Length: 482
Image (tube, rainbow, N blue to C red; front, side, top):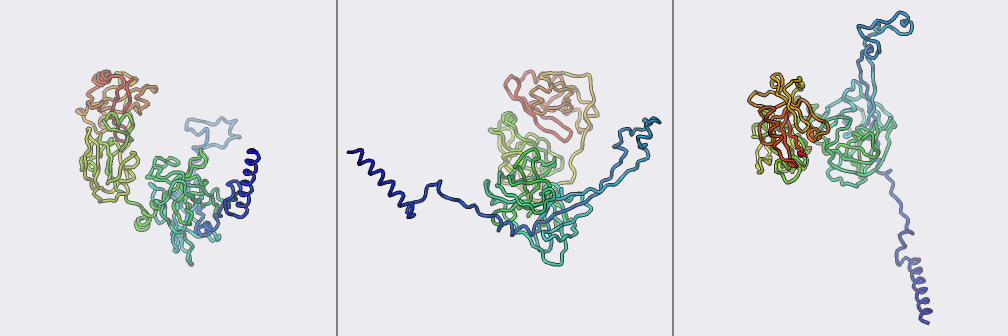
């Protein structure tokens, strides 16, 4: 009897649920709902008229003789071969016109266009094609290789469609974005994705060195997209597409539009960007270096060299200082410092917090304009018989010529690395043949014998820190002795 009552009650509950679903009193099960994704067309329609195709041409001068396999002053063509090969000496240097393609976005009704520096940097002729197929000649207004931004301009009789510039600081990881450009010459191609990451500084696309702070996105970017806009869901430009990792899929990079906006006034007025600097060379703080200096974690930027006469030198910065704050901003990674210092402004006075010999200290630095060229290349030392070796490192006295090239006096002491075992901890830490070692831990090095003695006295399992001179300046290296 009880089983019969339970069965009737269950059927009654099922019946009531069905009635409630039909009448809409309760929601349908998740599997029964249908979802309609919104179209991106209304957003794209607003921006696509302002996206342009940038076509460039440039002259390459090349000596064809360099490409002839038998071109040598000592080579004489055998007589029986002359009927098969044209004599290389009869060839003359040639000029060739190469062509490139990229994208851009119109940012004002009078024809100013943002694009990439690498799209137009070598161009002798630039043509811009609009969405309506009208084509104009363009001229470069300003270029900044360090950020890969360029400003070009076209002159049209009518007012041009232009895109609104947004605020890239408001982007969040996971936000939807749209890339528009001309990949492989396919005009006005639209792709969509999300913001994969922000603040990518340790990226050097195609080996280009600069001050980067990229937005990473998985919106498809390909050759030809360079210079085109990355837009948000309100149709505002939040980035300028610039680079990809060719061996990867779904990893593209865009320059934040806030950076581009900050450069536009200088590009318009001067054609280039003036940057501030401290006048130091820095390196990343590794875990071993942090321990050797007594820092609680691997953070900040380690000063490896202070250039004489620069703001850093005048303020009292020294090699071995670790900069942990710049103008109130924490330096989490060494790549943060060049970015902050270059964008702070010429003439600005900033406070720099450093870690020196176990204590924090604040210095005031007045930033100056960064010069165009810094440092000189130096030659590697010659071989010598005065070699001493330990832990896979061979060292010798520094030749006089090498001292002069590095600006060292005899009183500076030091040894030069004449050989290094590639399987050693020192090699793994970055030590290379030709590097000059001036200090080992906190002791100045007077010569090979002293270097070996100090290195042997270091206990196993402890950190060895070296201060070395290299071709471009100086730096610190650290490794654990085993």
